[in-house]
Image 1: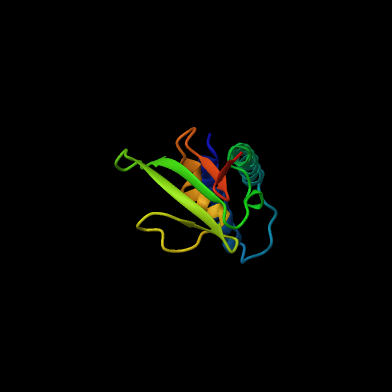
Image 2: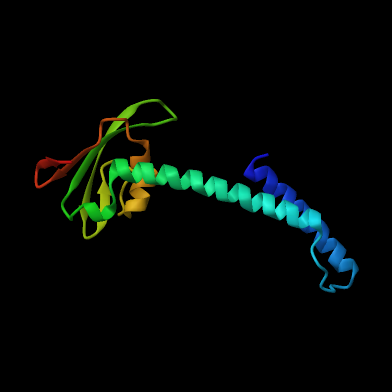
Length: 139
């Protein structure tokens, strides 16, 4: 059973419990075993999901680096495939005043490192990322 299935089961049990509490004129009742079991399953599934997401985030951080690894003026260049048309586009981003600015017709505002990773760098074509500082390629 997935985390989302468990979440639905938990929500259904919680809704049922609310109805039962209403019938007792909102007297504080102890949660049922079924309710607690559903909640525990959901929390365990959520923990597993978070562990998987954390492992992916660490792997991505190892591959890309962290915002602190870059100085103002550093440039990144990468290729990215768009899912809707399958075409590969080349992008460039520059760090200025602690924010990232990217090339592209729709990129008219600054981005945090997290936004840049989420919108672009997490979709980099393997082997295409180039990091530059003062016109020279860096690790």
